[in-house]
View (tube, rainbow, N blue to C red):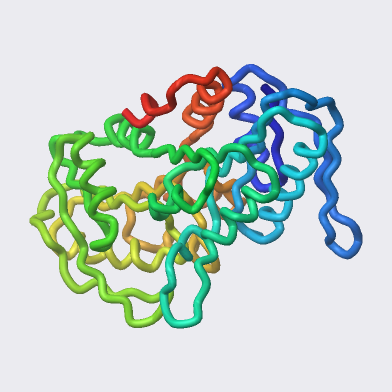
Length: 310
């Protein structure tokens, strides 16, 4: 087994290698003057079980091309099996035709990864579970819920916790977490007038006196969560904390969260935290290295990864 990484999230790749007690593979991923990407694998991978760690986060297109070119380089170097490890799968929000004459970009990206030569895909908290079916190769979608649940238990009295879905579409995810924590569930009814803007209309459930935990897979602009936090506090919640798997945090999202009424935003390191995220007083990052490392180890040993969902 050998683990390599592109430039999107080397800190996570190094942490995964530390968990596995293996060195990070030696590969050069650089750009020519015209920004064309060049990859060179600097060690023998013939007959090896290779894992490529690369989140397709900002800049999404560059990081996606790095992944595709690295897969091609490994295939042409006679690697026995190539597993694309995507802690964050970009383009996942384009998983259906949202209107006339629009693409299903998540399927296109799945095709690109497959055609480049990947034999397996390992990812974390896909925006929509059915994206697994976009791949014609084995795909394992891990869940961050066990990590998030442990952190909540470490920081809160679960007897006073209420899990809240920030919109109707996230109810299944919120219900699963509330079941893990054995606590109540509430829902924020959200109306969105334009993309990137949201207006909270109502809170379904009695949150008075509760420590509310907002749960979602992605935070992008942060508007939905900040509005939801304000609505929950107006309904009598004691505090509001958000637990999100993928901290996209585009544009002015970090500043928006920092000035919001959120007690804390907890994200994973599936996307490498920026300097702004690291310096924000109410944003905390927890590691997925153990989860991904164990999944990689079990895949290499041909063992089941379903036990990691518990």
